[in-house]
Image 1 (cartoon, one colour):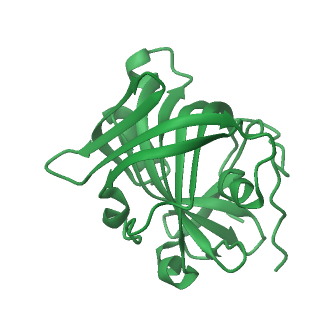
Image 2: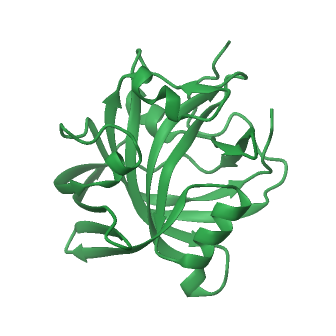
Length: 235
């Protein structure tokens, strides 16, 4: 199998978009993990995507902005736990192990429509000067997460690892016994260095992936991008 190269923009431009979103104020935290430890968590027909024999697990809090004109439904905080995948056609993607969001209706639509593992949670994003705090707490005494970061200078030339972790042009998801590939496209990421000031997290372990025993090997921040999604593909 020939795996597609990592590119800063999509290698498969969309002919038609079926949904548009904006991802804003993102922090990317990543830890290395042995591929064998997470292979069983991926949809059928996919395998862990690796860089130099290592794959990664990400914790990514951000602010979601959908195209809906109702602020309550269209803008809300979200935190996802994600793994990195590749399918038999060599398409690199993301597999979401959990997506915590603070709006019930979008959670229900995503769970029922595309079977993404969304969870209705209490969330907020706060600022103290330049410091950004993301707080997530699942309802009914579920796990929580608290991330505090200090965004820094823009990255003029991201490293190979930083491209690998952020330049993803689709997601793999199990859907009624099949594995779908949902393509997306957006401009290249405007990435910044960031300092992790505090991390208290239970979402990684709850998603079945190794918890953060060590500090993350990559801490990035981005003001965000606008994203277009195409129709799900079954092959």
